[in-house]
Amino acid sequence: MKPGLIIRLVILALLVAFIVTPESFAWVFQPLTKNGQPAIYTQNSLMNLTLSHLTIVAIATIASTLLAVGLAILVTRPFGAEFLPLSRSLANIGQTFPPVAVLALAVPVLGFGTAPTLVALFLYGLLPIFENALTGLTTLPPTVTEAARGVGMTDRQRLLGVELPLATPVILAGIRLSVVISVATATIGSTVAASTLGEVIIAGLLSNNIAFIAQGGLVVGVMAVLIYDALSALERVLMARTGQRRLQS
Image (cartoon, rainbow, N blue to C red):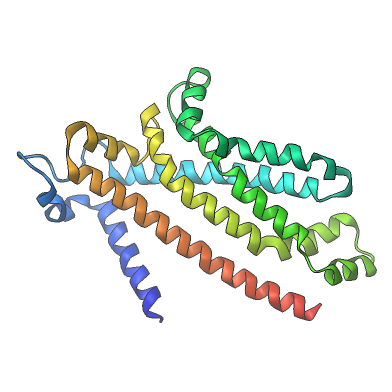
């Protein structure tokens, strides 16, 4: 087993242990407190906040992926090429408006809670996935697509059996970027009463408790790094398989 993998597994084990039994790590954060402040955030379960945080990120990412990949497929077909500028403008909306601004606009319509956070993360995640999907679908080797046509595959068969599988590693790179951004950005959801790890950070800011800020930021940061590494490993596996498929074709 590679040393890098061992280190990541140890970090993952420590993260899980902290989320499940945060009181066991009180001695780590105690030096960051003052005037008898609690070292561990106990107003809500850290496990529940983490699961809710990841659930929100997952739902927003799935929605962003479906729309972004769908738009990329549309504009790379002959009948949809004219919609490329419009699709790019739509994908850029999330990056044009900061998530905080999206939350401010969404709350009057959707109310407080998870919904505004989902909207903000959904819009913010569109651009990297759309651009990568567009790149993956427009940079396929002409020989592969011509071979697919030569064997009599329909447009649908070429898309599902050739184009998307070959473009998947590039699309996954966009999803990876979107997920990592969303894991960090989701913390602002707690400003509109969404259940995320931002609750711990905000509690620390309000009470001037550095221990709370540190543990909230630490969990978010470590999760983002581990998810990034996991998706990178999956991307490398898919790229290797794609390379083998191209050689066979």
